Length: 278
Ligand code: MG
Ligand code: MG
Image (cartoon, rainbow, N blue to C red; front, side, top):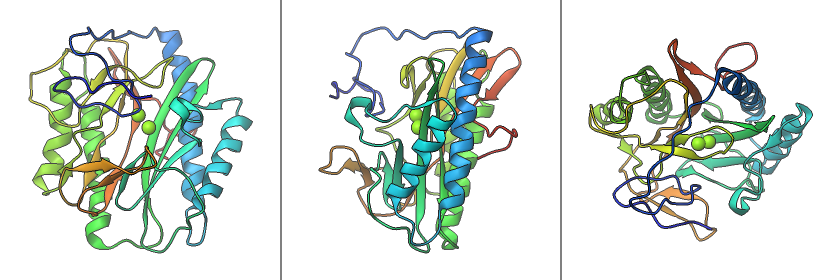
């Protein structure tokens, strides 16, 4: 199901790994394609907002997933994750020390939990992909700060996503904010191009050297997704083959938006239909 890890680069495990040396093919989307992506992205934003509102003590992860699937289908869209390389659900739900790709199950939310909700929707052949991290009731101050900083990392990455900048500038903008606060930055999973496929070229690591990497061009659509840990960088995958957790068991936060870069700058495609953050 998963290909070899690309030499020397981070990758998202959901991406069949590129063979080393294979050229990235980065598609530039037309205005019409970006319009479709905005529509798909809005379904994702609204779904995340709806699920966020359900995150109370005692609610099972499976209930969140069922509600999300119904919501997405009622909007005429398809849950992109369901069946993707065999993934069994519509949302990835990652609790506390789980980083990404958690499988919704019967576990119930508890006070003080932090839940990363990752959602994909396909509408009219184009994909939106975004994630939020939410607290169940009040969080401890250090976890609250982690969640806020991870969002800050995402917004800094979006601000750095401008024509003429390089992907290393984006990764650097994300990483430096996390490092300054002493957080771990997950290196084995990364952001990615998005369009007709959930995962397209290029890979967008959450770290980088300024001035390095491919130069961003008009029409690129990217999913930026910092995964930031309260402890160290290291993560591993559980025996279910999906759930990625921190090695040190400390909490992790994840925020993601799909964006389109044009002459007008970076536009977030996965906001809610009222134009606000999910
Ligand atoms: Mg995602
Ligand atoms: Mg993604």
